Length: 331
Ligand code: SAM
Ligand code: DTB
Ligand code: SF4
Image (cartoon, rainbow, N blue to C red; front, side, top):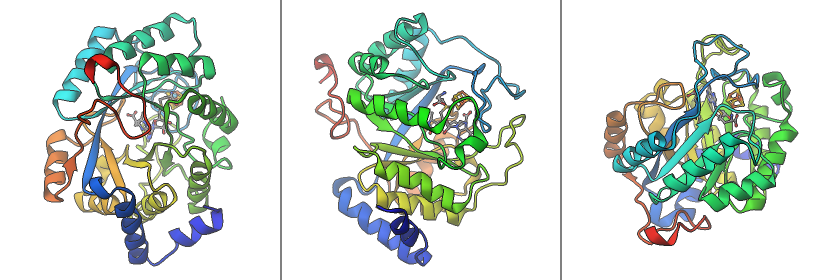
């Protein structure tokens, strides 16, 4: 979609936009239109990051109270993944507060080891480790990663206002490496960074132009973290958020649109509108990386009230269409 088409979609009368997005959703997710993917996050390496992303509590540039920790041992990560599976998650996403990873580094080998163990559980396995080149992407894919998360976060124009230690082009280079490896790409952004609605649509324009399209698109609402430069940003307007999600659904019909960080500030009714507009995945569990998420029990109650069903692990041991096939022993 061109920028003009995105804008025309976004600026429709609110209810026309909702109907448009729901039509697209039902056409592209016929058997799964009332499903919600539950995805559990785990911070496997917290804090002390060299980058200066203005929203992030894990940057070493700001005093946020988040301590720098070591990479978690494999058995602890595996135990958390088993708990996530037992609680109904079908996707497990591991995040590390790093600028990036390089093949040959000890920490990268350890991550490969973690991935090999976790991928045996049969969930979709996602990691987000910062920048990488084709070599690391291929190694991660081989170890069993199904999707790599690397967000563009905002428009190319607004990006330098938010981060100075790497560029928007660096993000695109990593995205290219991920796509070249055959891992699915999870790529989205944050709203509430002080950007304009044009910036939000420019961000969607970049996402919609990626070929292939991202398999999942997380839409995070800024969690204004004390100590970061963005600590005083006001919350995002719920109707602007719903419009953006609906436009993302229209622009990226087969992507899982994930209503990601910031749900603790949204009412159940606001979230219901986001789901109607096309969000079909959430982070599930009481914690994101360093910030809070709604309680699992409250989320299950919300899904029940809306007659939405958590998606199941595919019986044939494959993840979402087009994704990585899981190892033979768990098929
Ligand atoms: N270091 C890696 C990177 O930057 O790609 C991976 C971890 S980083 C925490 C992953 C994503 O979390 C960011 O791209 C951003 O979209 C999101 N994020 C981080 N802090 C956030 C906050 N305070 N509010 C909303 N989203 C946030
Ligand atoms: C994404 O887009 N959102 C997640 C995940 N990918 C890694 C991270 C949200 C982080 C929220 C702030 C925190 O917990 O520190
Ligand atoms: Fe580091 Fe990622 Fe946070 Fe940026 S968003 S400071 S790269 S952990």
